[in-house]
Image (cartoon, rainbow, N blue to C red):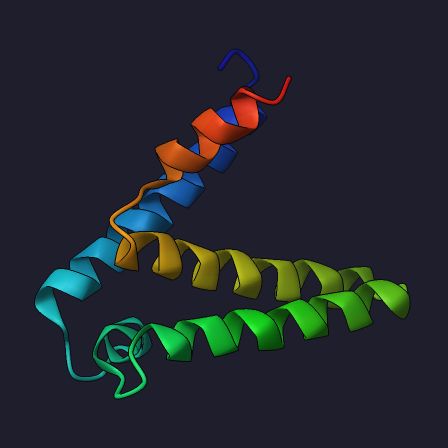
Length: 102
């Protein structure tokens, strides 16, 4: 990527994903991320969180609350990355799909 801002975005997402992968491997007791991988509902716990975050994101957009929209978008992206990890996927899979669309 030639734009430094785009590189930072990719680096941030990749760093977050690596943290998710580390928590998945190590399962620290005090980690929310680890709790998603060990939740009794399994994958459904993350799917429910994605649904919740989607609703909150939509409401923030409807209310024209850009600060809340950014926060809920970040929450959604985090839970999406957890789901990708659960499915054995990586951010690169998402990037490739997006790049194939234009």
